[in-house]
Length: 149
Image (cartoon, rainbow, N blue to C red; front, side, top):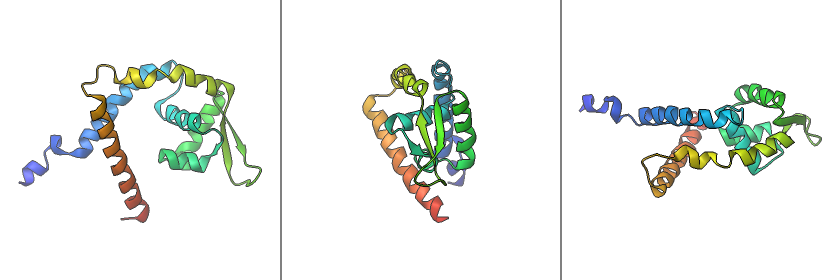
């Protein structure tokens, strides 16, 4: 029984890890056209939904700490995709907004989700179910980790 539990192909974490790596490889050429990395693309996705949010809110949405987020935002600002400014209401907060270049990138990126899933052997309903299950797991695991359990 123990041998079966310790088989690599039976590990959920391995399936998630390996699938994530393969998906990220498929993103790479698509994102080169935008001249962004995958984590930067995630920042853009959040800002395209709601522009002008704080670094703290951005980190919360992406499950990233400020130590990871700040250098990435700095590079995005250098590439003229975003602007970071201290909040007038609370100078401790930094607000991130899209530049014109960042807003225009949305049109270029519109084809990425469909192109990413081309030739993937799964029906849209299956993909939606996987996504829902993973988001449920993410929320529960994050909550446990936040509680220190």
